[in-house]
Length: 632
Image (cartoon, rainbow, N blue to C red; front, side, top):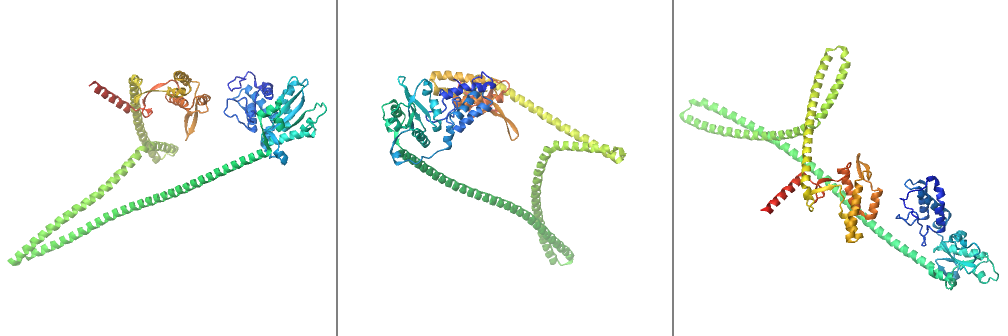
């Protein structure tokens, strides 16, 4: 029977309860197995799933959830899981108690500790009267229901058609809960005087059944029960099992202690590294703050020194200018005094002439020194002015750029403001104020001028947009011509620059994966077939495995990783083929989402991206030069 998720339902939701009876009967009779021989619980209707080891609570929750509220399940699956939930509640309710009650072993006498039992724990039932109801005698479910109080895992009956009585072996859990259940099972028969001792001393032909725990004599008997016990179990004493459990527990404790020590050691190492990194980061931040503070202080110091130098130069210039003026005045005074002494003697006149010449020479020297000082002062002033002018020009350029950036926005704001003022003025028009009328006229003229400026800016913007579109069209035409010219060349080998069909699936991952699963000849055929099938799926407009996500307010389309087809592809063929199909899907969605067919594109195969026109032209020029060299 197929219980896969793809099976179509042939009945409605209202008939679920009626249909659930059939799978419930199959579960009860053992045709569908829920609990395996090693005690694992599984869902017989979800065999294709990865999880096949459930706890009782989880399996019951899974069955109830599918039968009641799963929208992607059909009516048949809901009915099957409804039957499973009913079977868990009625037939395997003991599993929930076993999970909740890990009972420790009861006190055992020393004789019982040395007594050999069959382990896993087994019970023996004899003197089973067959009679006419032979079907119930051989039915394991009947005996498990009869002794459900002791939570048997299974019951195996042994019966020969020539005999009128049958025997059975009851299997319990191999833990201490199972031992408690087995001993309680034996005490039941001892209380009713139907124990093993009573069976051996029985004198009448009683039709009552007898039972006990399987021990060494049952294990070593030549009857079918003995052979079965030797196949399924072995003889062990209770003390051996206790010692083994104690040793296993001590081993687990030692392992856990060792792991805890390792974990603590790793935590100490991580804490040390964390503290070390924190201290290093703190030092780096402190050094950064110190460097920033030093930079600010050095900048301030440099500016202060520059201002002091300029001020000192200007003060020295003023001081020298005053000294020159004082000396010039003294020379003029001496010259006047010499002119008054014209009546002196010839000797005095010659002496006067010599002194006059000396004074003239000194005056010329002072004038030259004054001229040089003036030139030096002018150079200093020119340097200061040039530095100031350069700063003002840089600042004016920055302001001009900011004004140009805000021109259109400010102009629109001014227009709106003038319109608002005009509306206010129109409300004041009834007051017949000449000043108001004049102000409205000025504002109206200003508004018209602003509108004309805005229209000029818009016209300039439209011109730039038209030129940009024209340039973009020329670039697209050039790309199309290059694609057409490189079509033949791109099919020969794999150059660095060539044509790639965006949306075509790369067949190489399919070949690599198929080579691992098939023979070389068959792998190529399988790879081509599988690649063609998925290429057809890409062109299907009804399949769009994308979902829209919003990142920082921007909506984007990403691959839907929960898509059933993509999940099935990844599980069956692996990540390499899955990535090849996802890459082709993204290319198709980017370059031709409406047409759903592959389109050619200039491609840089070396760097794995879209090639620029500069790269393509450079590649073509190099190819032409190479051909010329080959011809020569």
